Length: 203
Image 1 (cartoon, rainbow, N blue to C red):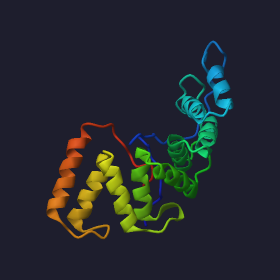
Image 2: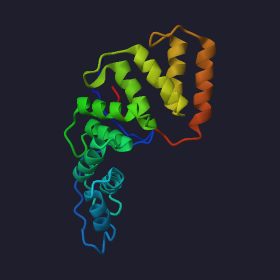
Image 3: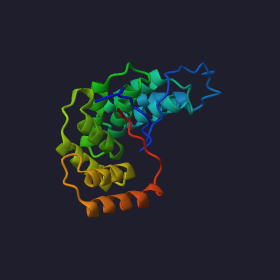
Image 4: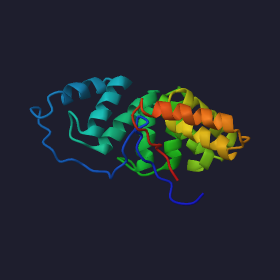
């Protein structure tokens, strides 16, 4: 595998990877009137509240932007089995936002999220198996199954990948022009109906 593996957005519900920054905005109650209330709820241990608080810190909406705080709260929710938090935590490990870059940790959390059927984690798991990311073994059969699950969940990038695989005989699939055309057409139809999604892991 050539090149440097990087995480990018998880805009297929995905995330725009960027440099870790700490915003120095005023944290007064007048500027963030809901912050203390949400934090109080999160401290009670509910993973949904922890996920909400993490998102506030990650986006800098209702809280000073802090990827470190976002990662901390995503981790708390993820440890309790919150599928979306697991996905976002994986993305943060992959893009070095708030935590050191760690592809094995990224794959760990993507895997937990995907196991719960979280839509945005399905495509990254296909990528993990296709390219052997984060210590995972290359497994084309598993990659195809994850691409299929992702495509069935409406992710057009997965549809396009399956189309190319059938077109070129990749991922262990037998070339099939009809199947390739079908997947390409489904991907084209879906492309205009969903937001842009970029695979959180690339190579």
